[in-house]
Image 1 (cartoon, rainbow, N blue to C red):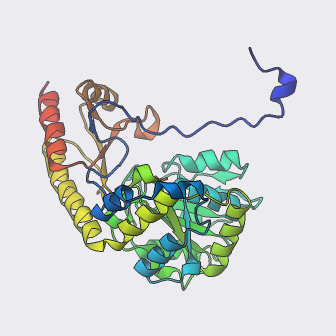
Image 2 (cartoon, rainbow, N blue to C red):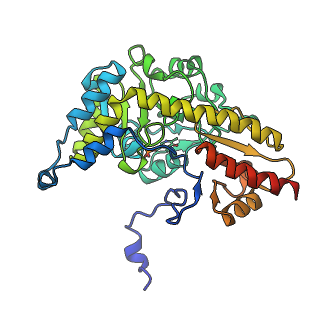
Length: 354
Ligand SMILES: *Cc1c(COP(=O)(O)O)cnc(C)c1O
């Protein structure tokens, strides 16, 4: 049955975000930038000793233990931390709270594709300045009037990291706009913009537990900013859903934040594997922008990326590919364990020779 036009005219229709595949069989999964290592050991202990009787109660709406752990970890006030169900939830709340201008918000044409989905969903006007031919963000494009700015650093899917002077320049040129820096991959890259928060009242830094902290399945993200902006963000959250974070996620999150040693070791291993992977890809003839995230965005001068993507998939190696446009010739390859990467390179070695 089709929906009658009279009904349809009042219904919100959106073009949803398309996440990478989550195959249920065992494959080498290098397609959604997950961490190949388990979360900190304390997380398992929390889950195993969970008092399920407590599930009858609502969780702490402020997620206080997690907020406190993050505040201590980053040396900010508890009133400077906002937590949500993955950074997707946090970012979506940020769009709703901070992007309310008639002027368009700005984000790169090649970037995390969720930004466009939220802009459309919330009916926020937007413009997407093009990355340059090396896939770099052109800072001057963000000197114009706007209703807010968002970009990931490192950017996705390019994996390019911009130093803090770049972020600061954008902040300087946009004192009257909110600037959100999406730092989903910052731990693999370099300095976080969090150190600029005291100096720029227009800055919001968003991070996630999904990548460096190995907890994509738990859904935890957070924003750090001034107490004033965090209060406004909380006001919107409490107007939407008070209990976004469940009890288990709050407690698991605390354990993951506390174990800084495990965290740094896991990041170190991935960065080491990434650097080796760059050498291997070069030997195979691939080129790529310098990857500073837990993935590499690579192209091959002789091989069609779409065909390569499908050949890999037939051999149970999943990477990410977007059809068409400027990135149609590229594969985004998540850094897995050294063993997973070896399987990828063994396959590619044979494939490239064909
Ligand atoms: C993975 C990712 C996110 C979202 O992560 P969550 O799992 O929702 O925390 C946000 N931004 C970018 C650029 C990402 O790659």
